[in-house]
Length: 395
Ligand code: NIG
Ligand code: FE
Image 1 (cartoon, rainbow, N blue to C red):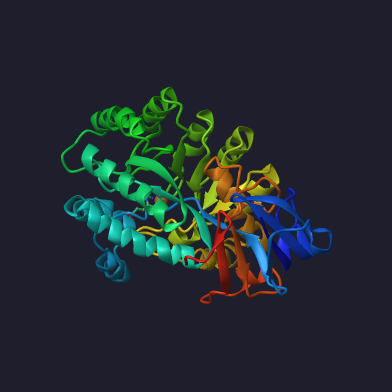
Image 2 (image 1 turned 60 degrees about the vertical axis):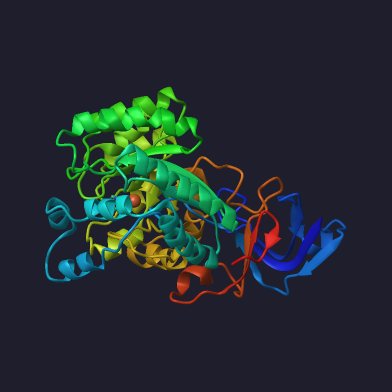
């Protein structure tokens, strides 16, 4: 048993507020938090770590990434600076399809080496749980390779949730989206049987798949007992949120074009709204997600990096905290909840994201006096120690 004492804890333990404990302590045993409270009341322990007034938060949960891929799309960054839009580039066969070609050409070892560097960058800013989506293979073998590589990142000392996103784009060998959705649904049971799939996602957009096509895939997921998530209303309102809510989705992600009816559907289903300020920023979007309506409806809001080589090539969850406040007007507390407790909820993981007895002992120690400072600055990493399942270091 180890006692970490003398820190300022932002527990996020209640439904609102930071849950601050000014001179607080955490008792860790077997990778779990056994006790959390004021240092003065702490139970005895074999080992004591002095926090010397440092800030402690839950470990960060990055609930939406596309971390495993081959190649680079910096050329598209230049094309967009010359006036091409994300949609123009996709229609011309670039975008997701360009990463698909590079990912198919990469070996498992090459994909793992590249993804390891990216995961380490996220971990260096305090990430202890990471979601990784497939969706740059778009054939059974490459989707499986991506998911195996994602699972392999677990050995770095970060918990990895895998999401099957084969319904990301139409691959070049198909010209019928309905036939491709049938293939995506047919590959799923085999991948699931190998333990490679924690959830199923799709890209519901005029550039990608229709709500009716996504619904067929979601039915297949639900026959296997798998939860679903959706890239919804990123570039237009397709009614994806309502569709996802009908399937009790864990989350709907992006949501710049979410309608009032979509907000109500998410609220009624308990689906988390995952906001992705990195993609909004990089694509120079101007349409803001309806944050005030989400708040009023009581929809939990999460944040994530959406790391991918095209629309959100960032590896900084801390920058997302700042961007969510500056661009989307979240409060610093909402932003931190978005990268901890609500990010965990978007992955269906209730055992993390707060500092409370019984939770996983995943937490961060920061060289800061108050949690609002995490969101107020950018381009600076104040992490002192990342603790994963009770073990410090390894960043
Ligand atoms: O979350 N919106 C669709 N998928 C990704 C982008 C993927 C890509 O451009 O490679 C996203 O933004
Ligand atoms: Fe995404």
